[in-house]
Length: 458
Image 1 (cartoon, rainbow, N blue to C red):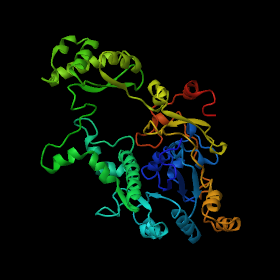
Image 2: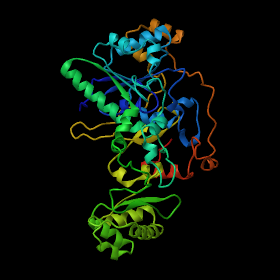
Image 3: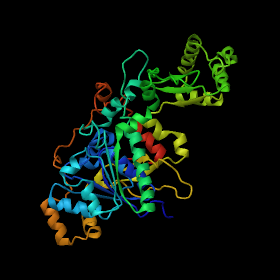
Image 4: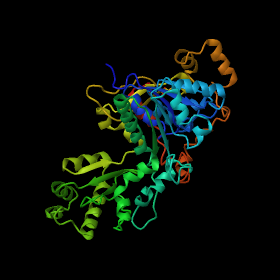
């Protein structure tokens, strides 16, 4: 069955997440993705989250973040566009692509003489998507940024945290995720526009603007002089009662939110506060004292139960609830298993990863369902294939390109393999430390093999 984006070629020149993940969303629906990296200084995601905390040679092929973000991308070339021969090869590739996705800071592509004008000359109807912290135009255009900074700039950190405490950043850069889906949507919209008009375009995507729109109500309130929302912790202001409560076990939690009068009565009954259930919580919202009494009762009740048991009892009573899942919980989650959410991927022996489960497609289509086709490619794995079969170089010409350093597969830091992570020390690292863990489950591989099969991670 043909997928909806069969025949569309995307040149993925992005880095880390927001600049490269949109291409994977299109790959799941048939687009051919050619991953482009400067082989001498490859993407940072290749060095992030090694299997079981241990990097193997070649370590730049081990990174879990890279494998998750780049599965279903068919090809990868390692090219140094700072060399004239590499730049020429890149422009040849642009001429044979529909979309170029780039997330280098404004000015980088200009200095490489690969700005939009140069790319358009190679492909007049090209769709060029540049994504950066603040876009190519405006007062912050020259400011470099990652999601951690735009998260603070857009105001999300101000709204995140508990009453009376200072603002907090999230565990992951919040702005990366809406930017990813905006990028995929904009590429699709540009393809539709090109089909109608025959014209390409340059989409200048500011992650700061996208994230600001997520919190539009708060910014509007500030602009008109109204009360700006404050930090409320785990409470949903739209619900007469909500919160996150500790369950039996280390760092086990369940989120609860009352969404109807029946749910209010059900929650009060389950936790032994049936008398409160007769209050019409939506016509006469409970006051702080009543909510406090109920919170104490819910906390006492959840503390004696595991998250799964609490979830089942609350669900049976009509109460919206969910365990707060960590990565291990998600991999073992029965609901996700039933929906076939995870895709099992066999990796190349050189990647030293084995068989792993990665999140499946972000959307489902009835007539053209997404499908898994290929693992994440290795650095420069398809240099020769792309250069000769797609770009038309002869064997002699390609070998000359390799000799000049225009194409390659080995990073400059190839000898700098990270040391193994100490599993005993990781839970005790500073809260700001990269790679900090809240606990180490020595049996996690056995659990995952019971879920996905005996050859998992091997």
